[in-house]
Amino acid sequence: MSVFDDLAAEQDRLAGILTGLDEKEWLSPSAAAGWTIADVVLHLAQSEEGVIASAAGAAPRGLGADAGSTVDDHAAIMVEAQRAAPGVVFARWQQARQSALAALRTADPRQPLQWVANPLKPATLATTRLAEHWAHGLDITTPLGIEFPDTDRLRHIAWLAHRTLPYALARAGEPAGPEIRCELTAPDGDGTWAFGPAAAESVITGLAGVFCRVAAQRLDPAASGLRVAGSHAATALRVIRTYA
Image (cartoon, rainbow, N blue to C red):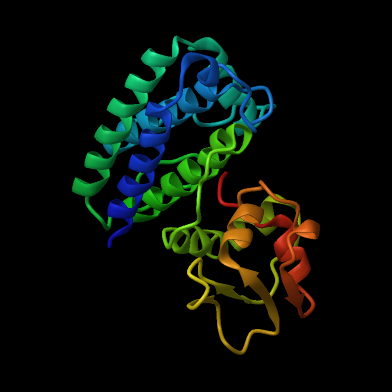
């Protein structure tokens, strides 16, 4: 399946979960500090509207950071300004995510689209959207005790985390190091997903789902059980991220 199909599947899974929530659950705290579950879904809707704008050639409004602020600060301001009833938020996200996916599917695959930190080709932008929906899916389901099993769609997220390591290192003020190899056990327990050269001196190994949680900053690397070898793997694991 393409990353676009997997993005659709991840969003459909989340839609099914959200459909089953009552208003009290929508307004309950999520695992994203300071946000209710409705706030999380509103943020996803706003982000998808940014994809639509970018695909149309406009700047993705509200997703960047102004001088002296961070992307997270800006996202919080946007959510606070546009809070609405759960049904309104859900409908807004449904409309936005369907339109955004359609725009990504039909965009020129070779032409980068403006995004938060750097222009991204449509398939890579779809990968970031899959990563964000999955991470916020954890934020929604964990406090409610709803099952949210890992799937093979995590392969896209693991690839993204490995691919953007140079950005993560630079953002953390760390010097660029040599190539890092990741050898991750797939959710089915049988397959192995490998990223980076086989001869790399620094290697990260462990469960793909755990690796993705660390990259999404939903799990402390020290508590992850992931194994590091070589002179740069521990630093890479400390700074790795899947979002700007």
